[in-house]
Image (cartoon, each protein chain N blue to C red):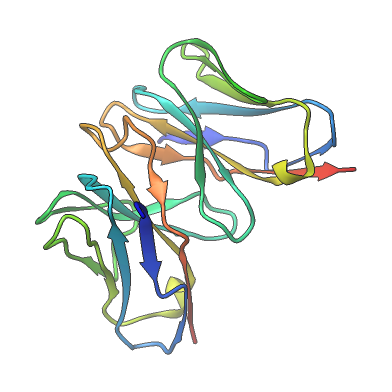
Length: 109
Length: 115
């Protein structure tokens, strides 16, 4: 079966750095998305990786290793507004999007 | 304004009733999707559509019906609602060749409670 694993919950301190991991076992790979979802709101797009390496976008970066079936989202200079769930989603060989259950990130002052 | 809108935002109904959730997008995206989101689960795909008059089942289609007579609209109908269909429903749209090679844009969701 196809599977995406993310930690259920993480806690970090305002101003710090946090890394949210995502490991996947899917039938093939055609890209990986990260979305942010604040409580009670819709998911919003953060990043898309299709090639190995690091993609940086302001305070957020996303890394992909296709050989290891692994990605992470790195959030720097954490702010209280970064408290949210972070969803990892992988596009498989049939171009189906497989969603992880999400990681709830709690930021403490 | 370009965007994707869902209605209603909140709905309470009874088991056995028919319920229709509406979704409208103004981007002219080819692909549209319906998901449900429940605690402990990721987003689960109910149905999707690649173009007007083309729809296909997702992971959890049972008990749901969709149609897409116009590119911009993609309504979801629960023909005879059951308590297990209590959930938050998200509609999304996407461009690109496969609908999964570009980001999906989500509506604000419909919170549906079935008593």
